[in-house]
Amino acid sequence: MQFNTLFGSDGDDRGVSPVVGVVLMVTATVIIGGVVASFVLGMGSGLESAPQASFGFTYDDTNLTIAHEGGATIQDDRLAVLVDDVSYPVSVTDGAVSTGTVVFDHAVDSNATVRVVWSDSNGDKTTPIAKWVGPTA
Image 1 (cartoon, helix red, strand yellow):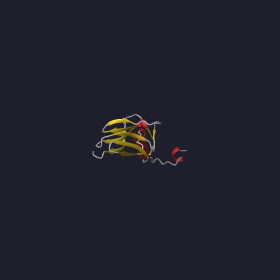
Image 2 (cartoon, one colour):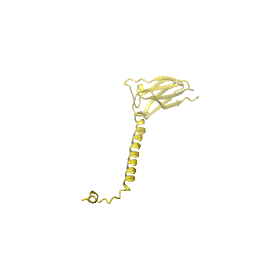
Image 3 (cartoon, one colour):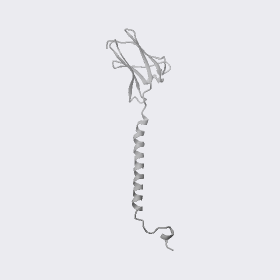
Image 4 (cartoon, one colour):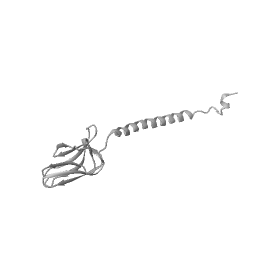
């Protein structure tokens, strides 16, 4: 009894090697593509995004008041108020800036530019989340 006749092979195996090679190449390409994609997409996962919050500005010719009007609650140590690039830290009693919380109440010039700035937990990234430009700026 011949082994080839038992399993139905008639000795014509010429097309098997190229097919196996193509299947292995496609498999390797898919695996490499998955590794590269997971690395690239995973690089941004550790970044914090700035909170979505609204701040209102009230100016009475000398004094500027900034209050949280809605959106996310933010830890006060993550916020600062910049008046013409001079930084004023935000500090509230319970440490949480939420709707209705006043974060700044000081005299400023009418030509000042004021920004509320959020920083990430490492302090590496800062993002302005609100801006006020004085009436004579």
